[in-house]
Image (tube, rainbow, N blue to C red; front, side, top):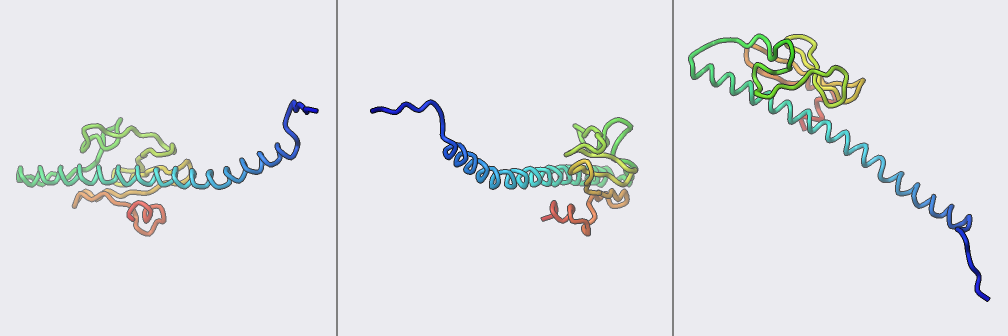
Length: 141
């Protein structure tokens, strides 16, 4: 006598759901950590680009024998347009984007509630985050 099954048994379905949930419980935290790490890498990369552009600006002024201070890194529309050939667009409180608080304070938004605060010093042309902040420590490592 040959038995013909037309579906899965309850045990097979429960076992499949258990396997899927175990895999998901391992994969989802790793994906979240990878996404957050990617955000920190983007912040670090942008910071290095801005720092290099400031060094380039300073070196050009040294070669021209000029002491012109850069009062602001940007114009009214685009962030960092005075030093970068392709400036960043300002997008307040949006993940992985920059916003401007003042001529010397900028924020890189990790998510809608957290940001990394950067300071621009116009006298020595430095752009760095506050090292006491945990998010800043993440990108400086």
